[in-house]
Length: 537
Image 1 (tube, rainbow, N blue to C red):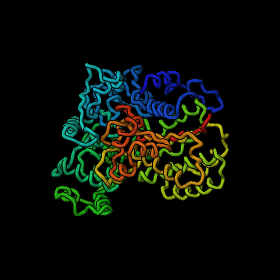
Image 2 (image 1 turned 180 degrees about the vertical axis):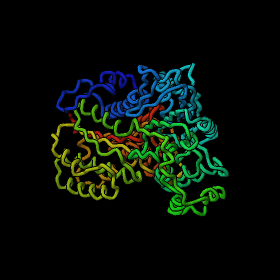
Image 3 (image 1 turned 60 degrees about the vertical axis):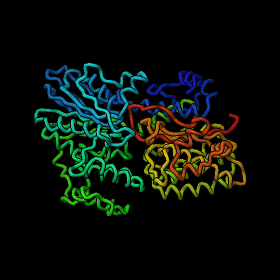
Image 4 (image 1 turned 45 degrees about the vertical axis):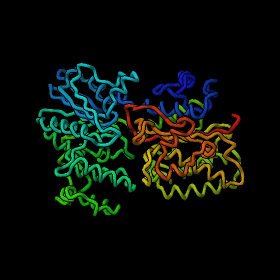
């Protein structure tokens, strides 16, 4: 990021400050001179700021030392502390969560073990984010692993250490479990005789066929000693208190990090059905067949988890609401579409392209084309069935706005990519590239160049700062990207057919459209932002 952009950010409201909810408030001269890309960066940064681990944990975790025996207070729950408190954690946000927890708990914490992403401590040190780091005298052992968000031998060692701690506890003990997105890759503990490599291979193959995260996690936890309630069973009879930062649509406790402290709602029979759906039953290693064939109808009983308390402390919606607040403070008409966007990335790209066309046609006052786009939008939204997306309300809000007001459409969730090639990329970069292609094709087929009347910026970014096995969090695009890429000799369709979005954005205009944040220390899925304003404003 250039120094100019940094200095402009300093004049804007920071995440966590009071936002001006009314768009009628005048914007500062600085914000008016900023590009849509710079606004998008600011909104993304603000959204992440409100779901950073420290502030979230300190909102819910309270140490009460005023009433005789020290007590840990978490919302309406109370736990006595008698040198009986232990901590484990796993996930992309857990390093910061653990640091905040130890600041609160002090010497009441006996010991802990956390499994966090490879390189995250060095990254936090380099970026000066000391609040995310444990102090030198910490009682918590930090173990790094899961390079490129994939289970590996280091993560396996960390999972073993976490399991050993949990199994050592007694009925007098309390285990504080910190869970965030990415926790599944950081807690690999395959049931013997399944090996880590075999489990990784079958999961990767299933993902390449377009399986949802829910389907992937069903398989992962069924083949795991710790997922699917396994950690809670290991810690029994100790009390278990789990604080969870959700990275899954709808915040289902049994899916986040594959539900290590939640009774599994799935059986091994469900795994067979998923594998059959993707025509993989004949590709199973013998070890996997052995494990899945054992008691295929068994399910956990809820009463087996009465010693567990699970609490969600942060989510994608919290981040989106902060971004919406920031957009409104800068004069945007801001609409939160949904925090549950899901579906194949190419279909979601069509949805966003149609929304952009609808807004631009409204600005151009082309009612005939706008009504056609409205119909296509309604049909596509019905096909996607995105929870919380009310297009009737969206249409009404957009049509009632004044034409000179910039528009900010916000959404969150997690798309899926069906792999066809061997390129390098991630779902956010692929989504941005596909939106650009959809807009280019729409403009090419239109009789009127309505998109050229507007400035358009689309941003898709992962709140963890890592989109797939790349260094980018995501990418930006505009309606002119494909044409500009052609002038540089880059054919967008060729890169998409090889799932090579990161290579494209790295080569296009020197990587200017990549969203580069580094690991953020949090994870609440992805944020999608559409910014539109009439040219000349």
